[in-house]
Image 1 (cartoon, helix red, strand yellow):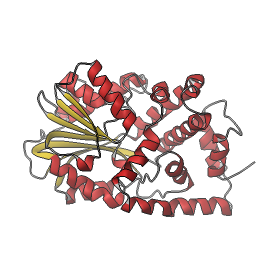
Image 2 (image 1 turned 120 degrees about the vertical axis):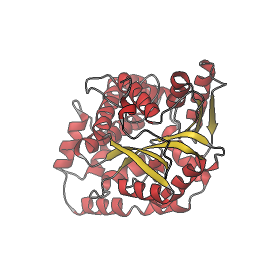
Image 3 (image 1 turned 180 degrees about the vertical axis):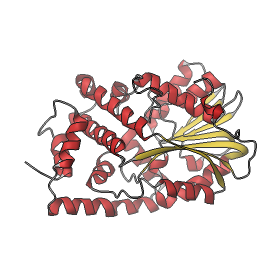
Image 4 (image 1 turned 120 degrees about the horizontal axis):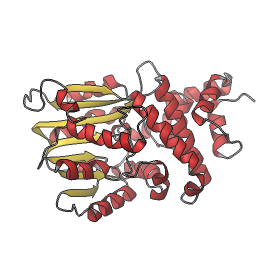
Length: 350
């Protein structure tokens, strides 16, 4: 029976049907044959208007923390079933499409650190540090003095335990803190997969805060998902915003470059990673489906099904261009010593 995508998604989550084969392809076919009646049009309109997102403009820091914890404070055992051993929950970097997820995530960590020209003794901040993979890698491999902040209690606890296990307490600090409350100044700053939670209304304040924390010749790498300007939010976006990332709103690349420049940044480099994230999401979906019993020992079946569908839909969106993702390398305007004049240094040692 033909039905609208949102209703089909909810039926899948409730366990009313399952998919035996390629879930990404199943989502593709469902969207191709979706009913175009009044309900689909209504849900798409609600997705575009997204009236519930207006609350994000005035939300308190406590409300922001609750939003983050809704998604990330699930069982670490659940996330460990589909992430790599470092627990990297962001786009991998596939130097070869045949690379394993583990290889690609290590390549991403190295790629970020090289872009930032991390050097021994650099004061490095990772905004939204997740389970700590990047700050630990920066401290071990590049001997940086690393600080990570996150609003997720589970992530902060896990990352702090990893720091202790690695005996890196003298070089790594984990803070359960809103980035807006951070103090101090840093040589290098990264924000990987965090800007998606900021929203268009607060994007300018976000870049101004990072600008304030960055030293004069420092570098800032902003890595985030965007929505192409020609693509409008629909019922699929409503599903993600309501069931996976509350109040999450993607912005256009032009929004990010505009607000970064207004804050005083100069854009040194922009790299599109859309194909890399499509491969990453497919790998996560395959692991989720292959490890059903272990996942269900950590979370309920609705959560397991929700994450499958969310990641399968994301893989499809990245494959077809409905979503994009970019790494922007920024410096303070006129900082001549921040980075070399060519990109060659970014790929040295690859």
